[in-house]
Length: 436
Image 1 (spheres, rainbow, N blue to C red):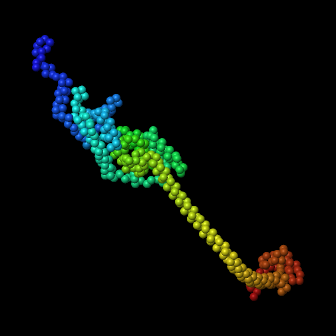
Image 2 (cartoon, rainbow, N blue to C red):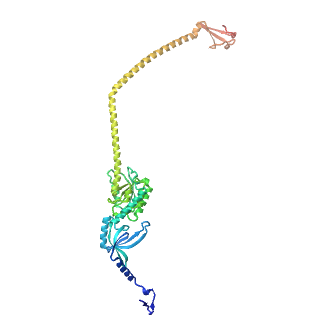
Image 3 (spheres, rainbow, N blue to C red):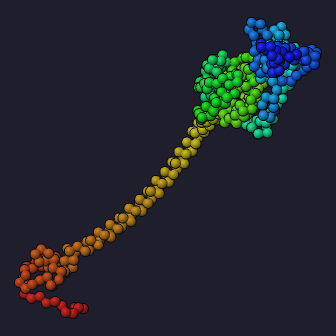
């Protein structure tokens, strides 16, 4: 139908054929109603931007599909769940999947295609299959575990020796977590009165920032690793979906290759995360992690006590042996002393007799020597020589031994056996030939 403008002239422009947006949307709605005719479809997708209207209780979200290799979104559509359906579906899903109904989960949902002139195209969700989500989570966990095993790091942290006295503890958790205070309180109340040295390295323990925050805390511990014996990663309770950050390949590979033993106490007895699997030791709760460290100290104390008892028993045994030996020696000692004294007495008597014999022999020898010496001295005495007809010539009181000592006119004294004679030298003459 052609239209005329205000001047009455015919208008052949685009406006002559234009329809309103409402009309177009209604036409689209009619086409969709005819094409889908209230049909229901099971659709695989990932939930994103999940929001609940606080007034109406309706849930609004986006369903997206990503390229598995590039993670780029290849399809997206709005979704909604009416309030009554949302309460039922949420309760059912979370009881079966043990996951919060939240963004980031892959789901299998039953939908109806709808179109509204104002709100556009969307999918009305009327049912959900929790087993698909559980299966996807299991597949993702299995893939992470497979990669860790292929990398050869899955068991590295478990192979580290656990210190006998794990007293210097690096704690990675939120400083406001209730589990943190429970952990410290349990350490302080240890029955053995052990001293621990805990150091907090704060981290975000849930949500999108948790993975990067936990890795940053591990890096901080690594820079001071010589100051610690173990690392403890703990958090309090919460929904199962809060544990998603612990099913991370990046976090798991950091923990698996960490040079200190890692103990986890994430606070869920039923759920075992990938982090729990690669850690050295998994405790169910923060309190259980503290009890594990205390138990390790108890083992060391028990070992020391056992060694002390063995040392005490060995010392007592040695003392008993020595006491028995002393008692036996005490009984044998009088006889041994008596035999030893008799033997010593015999030796002394023998030495006395030998000494006496040698002394007498020596005295005889010395007496004979003295007699010979005395005889020689008497024969060599001047008086004895003078009696035999010899005389001594003295000059100035000294014996003249050579004629060369005399000069003419010297006054000399001649001594005989029975007196003295004084004379003067009138002539000295040496003998030229031997008188014999």
